[in-house]
Length: 388
Ligand SMILES: Cc1ncc(C[n+]2csc(CCOP(=O)(O)OP(=O)(O)O)c2C)c(N)n1
Ligand SMILES: [Mg+2]
Image 1 (spheres, helix red, strand yellow):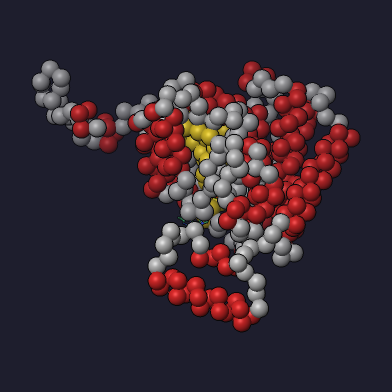
Image 2: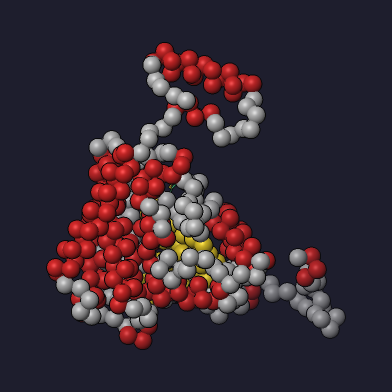
């Protein structure tokens, strides 16, 4: 970057340039950061802005609908399994299905996706078998690597840490002259992490083909967005780094698909990153280890029930004569069966080998660790636990 550095006290003609001295003079941005409009195409009543309707075939619309139902069904089943003691900690997604599924609908197999832990609806659509995700959430390490031929990164529990690698991936695409893009998803809470700001800056400066989707669901565990940031317009972050940025109704699947599609096309065209703030709401628990009734008024949740992304899309599809009450029933039942089949497959898979706990870190195990392993194995022997 050093070669681009200019002496700001001199103009190109060599005359002295006086730098602005007051904040109002320095603020040359024509954009009012407080008023980035929220794009909506399909409203709560099923009314549609036809000028912006994404051009999806009837078949694709139904695939998207089914992906949303599958996400909700998987979510509910995982919650049940966790409450039965048969699943590890899990982060529900109820109410965020349009946002989650919509961000991958425009992607091709060659594009890349970097999810967060709440993105399983998108991961399923990208080709992750559900039993694979169950292994992941149950804590088996073989659940973490993405399946072969699925261009996804594994998600990171370290908030925001997966955003920089996603930008690196995009920069790699530029380097290799590929016309693909990366979608990376993170939360309102993650937007406060320094790594996310670094990622935005790198992407903007290097025109990385990245679509940032900030899923603003109102909460970061018990921290509401108003306490998270003094500028609740999170899309302003993108503007600050010189990235075209928009706010989208994240409960409107058509708006999500439209926005991500436009952003993906820009990215693949060499026009660099886009920042999408998707406004939605975390209707359920942060994770199964959480109890939101201790920190939020349940009254706040009620209006979001009326903004349910699935109900809204159903009205739209019924109006297009693509869906009836009977076909909704059929789709719901087939999703239930698919999730149950995945669950049964998951239950039939081998459980963990406790002997493995010391593997995978070192090629040559340090002496101290090897001593601990021997001690641990002795304890397993004493308890009569099998291991390899
Ligand atoms: C670096 C780091 N700090 C704190 C945590 C604990 N933590 C887990 S989830 C979470 C909230 C994240 O909120 P947000 O980014 O809004 O995503 P959401 O859970 O709402 O989808 C926090 C603080 C963590 N995992 N990593
Ligand atoms: Mg959040």
